[in-house]
Image (cartoon, rainbow over all chains, first blue to last red; front, side, top):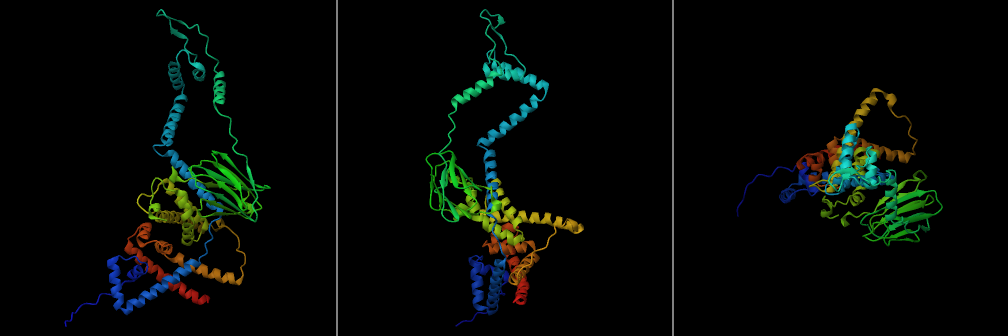
Length: 305
Length: 176
């Protein structure tokens, strides 16, 4: 038999006890505290007292009433976040943002240049050179902006120069009209989208259910003093369906959808519940003060981009 | 949520993070400040900054709480300046009486006021570490949020618990 003498380790500090309670000790620390507690009644008692205080304080803090923000406030916050996302996306390098920055710079430079007579004259010369003797309607319009006429001198077959016999280009005023007409000829007629769908939920609650998050798109919800609830696809329709249900509206969309929706709910309903792809419901309580508020429901799933 | 989803990257789904963390962040901020308007503003600001300057190497939830805490701390400084001005010219203070309350509500209100007051008497860091602990953050995450060491968080937490317990234990006895 042998006996070893040793020094009893010092008592545990209160912060160590707290780290033990909160499971914040590493392996070595846990081993040290456990072995000390096994042999020290004083520290074990202090541990229990601290645990009791911790629970007590948690209870008191939980008593502080916290009313979650009004849904409209929440929606405003979400809208602010969406705006920030849009700003960031537009300014991101490698996207249209870079182009936008260059465009802004060009506009600034052109503005500065055109604000002086010399600048206007210089730009007019460059435009005249660029459009040549046969500027066409757009070139003629540009020349007109800078107070120039198309250069009518053209190289003669014999090497000399003479005034071109060609008639002057079309009057500049014609150019916008021509462009506009061309645009109208090319642009397909505006698609009014599918007709609106009326829905009539039974009970005081409206459930708006979207089957999926989408590649892109947003739904705008308005609560308004109208007789009936309606929904429509305002743009980007590609096979999505709006289906009236007993509880409200089901939007049968796909993950690849890019449609935008407008939904109007009458004031007489008490609650609007928005459910997107089985995620947690967003609940909007209808109050008279919330009439004509817009809620933007972001449907975009960035993982699909 | 899985950790991978909490890690910031270019595909950060801010809307999803908003839906998951906004309410918890708001609750924490109300308890930290006692002011729901300030809490809503700070929570919104934290999410906007998440979009504008996403964190590179920290968990998003802890980052959001840290940023929002800084936002309210800065606002609190501005408010302190405003209060100083107000003390100099009381006519600037908003006027109006609170409506009378029933007895039961009054008692509950008294207790909540006592908790609020006790929290307010803690130092800013003590209150922050205590309330972040209540939200389930690890000590190292709390340390990052308040700019201190993990060891100091344990010390501050123990001190805050003792202060609140000493003050509110006595108050609770009086209210019983």
